[in-house]
Image: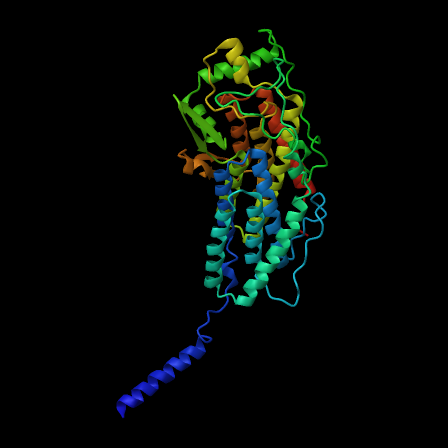
Length: 446
């Protein structure tokens, strides 16, 4: 009798526990998905795939921009204080709205939209697909989200992603894949392929890509480069000699700065009959890393984080369009070419010269633009430690502000032996002006 009563008590207790816990189902907790770290993780995955697939700096900037916009346009549905970028970004029509009769987790939908668009713009789609499958399944389980809400959120993320991809499809990128390659001009002042691989010029038609905010690719055209003149008394020759002398007399700090900001996605090393390549982040990827550091340090929300990535990536995408417009207009020869011909045939720059014309410096333009947008978000004196390059075996560096970082990124190109000073100074001014324009033109809040 006692044993029977004991089992009845156990069964009754288990029944009550089952009922009390909602038939074994975990209560939905949206805060688990709304953590900014979830978005940081998705962005880092996209960066890793960009590195793996070896996209050039201009193309990488495009790959960052469109997924960020898709995530932003999705997430604002949960944050009425933020406004759509449709009507602000060139040719972006109104984003589809969610069904008012359905329940969604817009945080999940925004991450999904980001990954769907990102996957469509890279080569190694399976790397994004595998990541997303595991990532979203874990978030669904940990949050206790219902199957119906999960399906609704994924469907809406797909809808926004397709809207953004349809818009991206009309930016002239695909058409420029069929445009003719640059034909080498042999006059002394024109750019020519450089050692060790003598690669063809990258993206000579990038100024044909539709800008995101700029009125045109020519809007922030810099001053003309210094007049080409190989007379040893000329200003140009003195600028050339400066690159040579600085490169020969680098101190340890200057060498560290040059390597820290190298950000060359493909560096080839030749030894005898063998060759191997080193993959790294692009300049844009480095500033995306700085954006991540700043967002985490400031401990901002998911919505603020997505908005920050979006603003920075849009500014950098337009910066590359602006910079490449000038590069392939002036088509100025690189220092390495002239130094080897006129001064020292055995001289090599500390950094491998990238395969495109010299003026203006891409690092300078992009760093100027990114620093302005980040300063607008986080303030003038936002000190931070930049750990972005540590995974590439380079030490962290400390900066007192984003402008401080941009200035160092710019001068690093002189230390690296790949730019004359006008490309650095005028490029930084070009990017700074462009970044300020983005801040003034692009509105994220009511």
